Amino acid sequence: MRTIEPWVTEPLERFLQESQARLVLLTTSSGQVVAQHGFSRSLDVMAASSLGAGIMASTGAIADLMGSSGFGTIVHEGTRQSLILAAIDTPRGRWLGLVVFGRETTVGLVQLFWNVLARELLARMPATVNAPPKRAETFERDLDASLRSLFGR
Image (cartoon, rainbow, N blue to C red; front, side, top):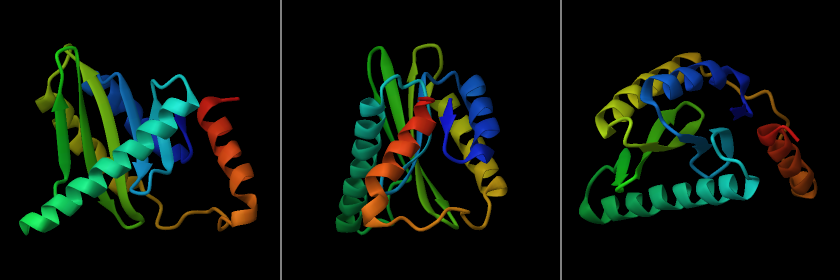
């Protein structure tokens, strides 16, 4: 597992063990990666985080058209693997979780343990982020450093 914010590690490891999920990606609503487990290539992480953020944004727009307050969780069930895309509203903005799991667990169990994880993350989340503001001229270097941190390179 790789994390940008170390306080996320313990609750996420417990979630993985209890839910038996194969892959987990925790991001901000804009697709910035907070933590990941199971992805082997940075390209896969970046694509999944962007797609997950886009899916949540587009289903939010559909909910608005329907007069709904939104969809907090989206489930896609496949024959061998399934995924849950779920939101956590935090004091620091909306975070998204993309969880891929197989036949060794169920949608209900993954959702149950996701809800436990969400409560634990909210309880542990620091009120502020101790990071300097990002500037356009250092974006590429900052992105590279984040990816090295996530993939241990």
